[in-house]
Amino acid sequence: MKVYRHKKTGNLYLQLDEVKNCTNANDGQKMFFYTEYGKENPMRFVREISEFLDKFEEVNLS
Image (tube, rainbow, N blue to C red; front, side, top):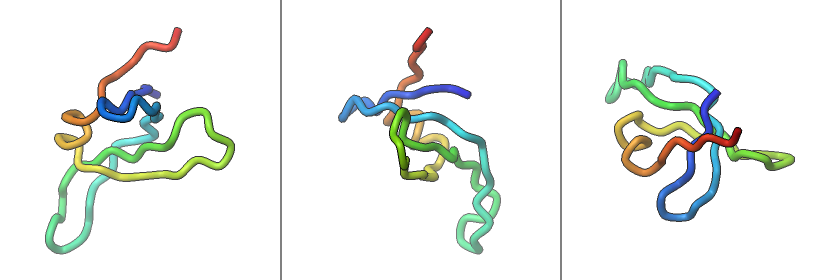
């Protein structure tokens, strides 16, 4: 799994998976499913891949 940093806030997120939007208006749209990194009860989110890659940058924590 990859870790990303939000370019504006600096918060870290863990990419959980790549998913497909199946709503009528956006059927087939590819999205990232991701979660807050390092939190006890993290929120989970989905975002269109192109928008995600514009707003986040991959980081190497090793």
